Length: 305
Image (tube, rainbow, N blue to C red):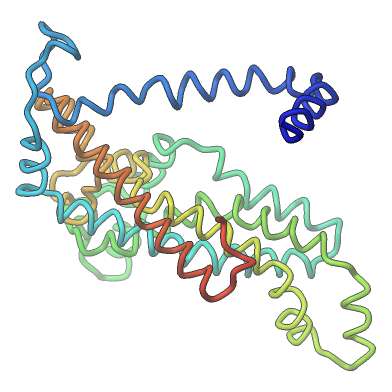
């Protein structure tokens, strides 16, 4: 009873703030809870005539079709590329943030802007930049190779090359965002720590290793855990637009998101594409729970929950 009274007093005291939160809570409920009824789609043989509720149940047929078909390939591609993106993004983001931190304040804005501009470009625009570089006949890279006596490369027909091309493209587009986050964290470090270390004779590398990195470690772990939660969700624009949906690249670049899109666009099979999306969410949930449990054993204070 006392707890209820205390909660009522708290709500009365903060009624204004709670009222301001209502629109956000309403949108959250509208877009995150109401659509949950769609979870029945993966278990139905959906057709437009009968609608969602009238369509016959299919049990696990959609999942069996997915698992018997391309589930293994698209899952491996998705996990492999996203794992590469996470590792490269973490290392380069911290490295660039440390470099920016060492620069004079008047130059930081210039470099920040240069790094951040690609983040605002859509993958459609970036795909044409890639085409200008890798076009078979007119691409800059092939012209450069020919001028050096080499043979032109069929970039969009050679899957193995894209194990390097995609990480480079993703890094170029997203490095500014990751750098900004870690750079902001470094700005919050007490300058007196560096001054005390310098007085004790610590070099800049020692200061980075013993002050900068430990101070941003909790942020790095938190962001990595959040990224692991989305490791099963690929960047559709990168894998579809930037690769120009080349069928020759499917063995490497076909991920869950592009697979679901093509299943819906070409086959019109809503049940199977929904099954792939449901599978994607379940695998992502399992991975983030495992990653969080691992971090909790190593460093309990850095775990998300």
